[in-house]
Image (cartoon, rainbow, N blue to C red):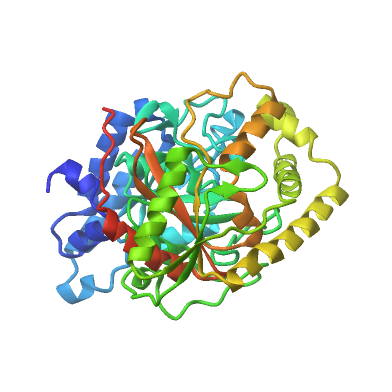
Length: 469
């Protein structure tokens, strides 16, 4: 296996090669750091590369590995010596965390975020911090003061946001896996844009320890990977209750990775390409939803065209999003004009609480849809990837309208707290950019969507690599 093949190998395969002593953590880290040095100046997927720290840790882990017997190797953490990238909204001790704000580029974190602790305990080596939109506010990662995060399939296009750097790095072979976060599509959208797998877990599946969650439970951390098995295994690492969490779920009886091997019973599956009252997906995106439905029907599942009622969702969700920006402990003049405008639209605490109450009512309606169906198949976004800077000359109000009309299939399931996986389905015939769908599951049913995604993945024989060097 040459270095390029190793860079694109599944993380679980890399972990097995390390346990067999066929490669070392130093080998892997050097491969990825070399690729980052050669390629990321074009891609802009990393805000900060922790090269010296990553090499030092890889050497320590390689020395540990050399001293272990065959039986001891089986006791290693699951991802011992595997590199990973962390989104620059999540602090990593002694590494800068900018939150996508240019004025905070040199802001050094003093402690690890909770999900970062989980990742370190699993044996990962952190390569660096990936690009995000300013405060994670937007579905494109082009904050002032940073290079834009570009799509590795076509550098003139966006990698999405706000986990755009994480998705781009994974798609381009600049990391085998990455952490992202999602409050309205910020894992699923970049996964769609870059042709990788992203999981938005159920509310309460991944702890927000040690910080609080300030948007009514709409946001969560989750994995980004090149295949379903790696994403599921990384979710196993991230998941778990920490004492005092405001939302939590019981630990499932089996791992999420095990779900990739699980045989499913016949499921009742709904599908739609329309998000009322916003609109319908463009023809090629709608076609991939229909084609996915045909694949699922061929697997023996029952498919029906149907969709929940999304009426009344946009205004309260927008209010909560605006309040999230306004609550950031950063002076408003330090923010971009778009985020300054958003902050000024946030309104009062009373309006925020009214919006929370309204989305809870909407969430009941959305979740009740799954009394009849096990899975819902939808587009991730309603139209293809946007170009870098495509909306930069628009007014804030016009930009907001564009955002709503693009990401509409994603926020409803942040409101409902439901698990969702974004899965690539191939490349567009017209643009050669990735296409994809999302599978929405019942409450706490990550195992079901992961199993179904693994079935679909096996049918499609994906694995194409972008070439932009």
